[in-house]
Amino acid sequence: MQLKIGNIFIDDVQFGNATEVKGDILYVNKDEFLAEAGADERIASVDVYLAKPGEETRIIPVKDVIEPRVKVEGQGGIFPGFMSDVEQVGNGITNVLKGAAIVTTGRIVGFQEGIIDMSGPGAEFTPFSKTNNIVLKVEPIEGIGQHEHEEIVRLAGFRAAIYVGKAGKDIEPNEVKVFETKPLAEQINEYKDLPKVAYVYMLQTQGLLHDTYVYGVDAKKIIPTFLYPTEVFDGAIVSGNCVSACDKNPTYVHMNHPVIEELYAGHGKDYNFLGCIITNENVTLMDKERSSNMTAKLVEFLGVDAVIISEEGFGNPDADLVMNCNKITKKGIKTVLITDEYAGQDGGSQSLADSTPLGDAVVTGGNANEIIKLPVMKNVIGYPEVAEVIAGGFQGSLNEDGSIIVELQAITGATSEVGYGYLSAKTY
Image 1 (spheres, rainbow, N blue to C red):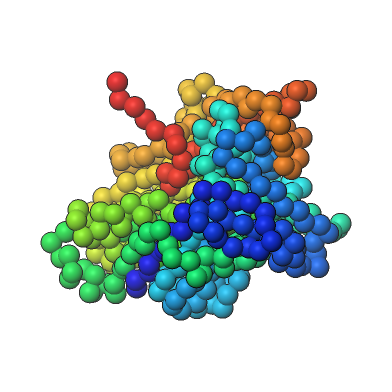
Image 2 (cartoon, one colour):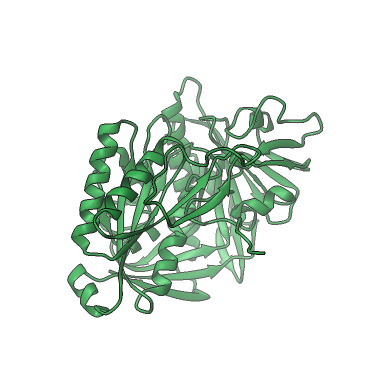
């Protein structure tokens, strides 16, 4: 399975008479954009704003971030199971408006939504302060329940991304990246002298607005399975969850998955990257045992020498992470874990809800309980009062002058458990 990603570099986004790319500027026809995004009878109103790097703009509460992409050649389309037929994707040519993003906001759905500041200290913790954001504000009609509210906003964001992404279909990309994973036997034989590596890709699926979708299916209903890594880049996996903003994977992060991209970077040089095993994060012990058993079985079946395992969320899913680590390690396969920490505001508490002595190689995304003060912004898109409700906020978080005091937990992408962020460690 080979996929060519054509990156079209976007340095600015402006409203214009037509939705098109001219040079490095993306122009968006506001009326057409709103008509496409708002094409749902359950929506009462939609609006659109632009938020650019360096501006004194705050977006709150952030629900999802999505990258505009378009299928130029090959089978299927972007967001299969939602915006296109359920055909296997991850092949052919996909063009990307690199530097642009759709950000969805509106009335709060669940308390675990986030904040994006486009400047100031908060901007240093979110990767989406560096993107040119087309902010879609969606308000559903009265009487809509939480789960339907989330669905309405999610689908509106996908429609918006598809509409904008089409502007890149006939544009010559600034760069083309080629990603390829061959059928298993062929892949193993091609680099048979290199260590074999796979990625165990844990998806947040605890329900109660903690959902992730694979080809349109709620992933809590799946059993662990194998994906070509290139399928992820075409939107085969999308976010539908309202877990803590700091460590949830927005759809944009799935589509630009840094673990997968890094594994491809070393493929054929340092190791042989065989692909992804996706697994869910469950609530009950029986479901955790089932999924971790099957994940370990798939890893063993592939015959790999090592795996990287990443978590999404914290607390209850820590048990899934530890089970996967234990069962895979006991099969003689090396594991590296990626997580973040909830170690208290002073950093002195236990970092994870579960642990294991077999987890002896761990990468951390940082402590989500660290406190940060976000200054007053000239422009606020959304509802600043939810700062006291969202995870990481508390009574008194929103000051009278409009500044906000919260934990990093409230900032979108601040402690990314797949490394799509800016926190790092230094050796002195």
